Image (cartoon, rainbow, N blue to C red; front, side, top):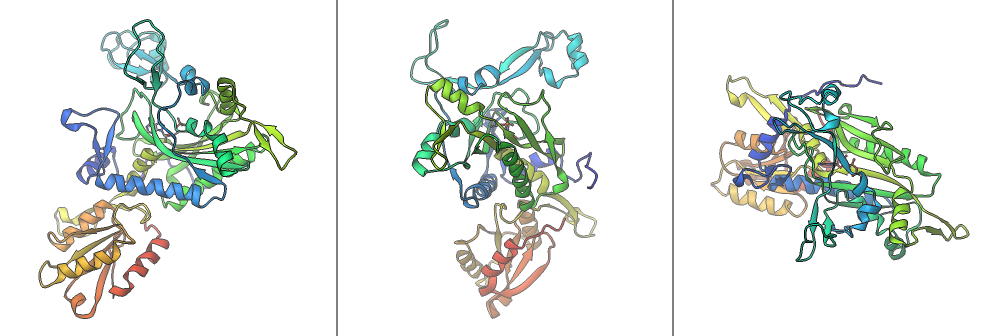
Length: 462
Ligand code: GAP
């Protein structure tokens, strides 16, 4: 086995990624004209395309490629008892301390234990408060009236902090409507909200984010094997996505890291520019969630195994839980490259390129007429019309061709098609590859087929 990397390898920094993301319309700070809203981000034209493709890729992997996994889109607002049953009201807390002098707030588990013991602020040396538990769930009110101070708040409602619970409360509905038999899974992609105190590192940890979660219901006793199988599958997923596999590793949760529901948990970590960080969690949640929902709802959530003498049991749940927005950040960092491509002694010697896998690239193919005149623009538009049914396309006729290639490189477009005078004469076009910058000439009629082949057989060069 190769040595584990200790430091991030590559040219990306969080500053460069944040600035490229803004410049090219991947991600903008929320409400920027008002000074920005921390913990919230907006996905621009390229960002939403990238996010949709990552989500689509995950969805296909989970549902289309598995006989026994179906989808769900549950509401963000759920009955407040859900969160009592799930343990989030009681346990979903961060330990916080405040500095009485400079008023900075810290997560007690993220500052030097010596500071905590001496109750000295790591920033200014001022006195720290006692550690307090702070619940991460956002609370709001449903209906027109908020409760009077001191009264029981019957209108209180939470924004969901994980998508998983929407699946658990629907598990019986799905068994009945879709005749599911254990083992089976339910997949869901959606927003989740957490009142995070530390939201640095761009979109890594935000208050509003998206999760891609799959809950797999199994017979107790088969949970450990299933857990191990899902670990293998999730690792293979990243391999297929074409990310740098030496930038991924496993981290098993120790007893003090395990969430309140977990019997065993492994994170897949990615080596971001700021170090190794969690990307996805694979959890053995035991029968904790369904037992608790049975207790709090009074509904029988046992599975009845009709093929096995109507044996009844509460299933165990194996969960794979990935952040969609965090995966997007990982893919941006992973794809980011800077390369020397010429030796003229100016800025044009270098290019910034996003080496996205073609299945997630926001634009698959850009159509570039060498000139606007002499019918080349019309011909290029015609080719675009032909390709756009099958591929996400862009059209650019502004500026020197070299500059246009660079713009597409920076957007991560894997293929460019250039139309020139020869195209008019003999119906051939030039296909240019982002990674190698190589170009081939081929008949226009073969373009669609060739693009499909290149996407299917794509191998990252570096
Ligand atoms: N249902 C289990 C669950 O929510 P988690 O480890 O708390 O487990 C799962 O979250 C994944 O969701 C994380 O691995 C991460 O990718 C993403 N995630 C969690 N909190 C996040 C936040 N504040 N901002 C962005 N992504 C977050």
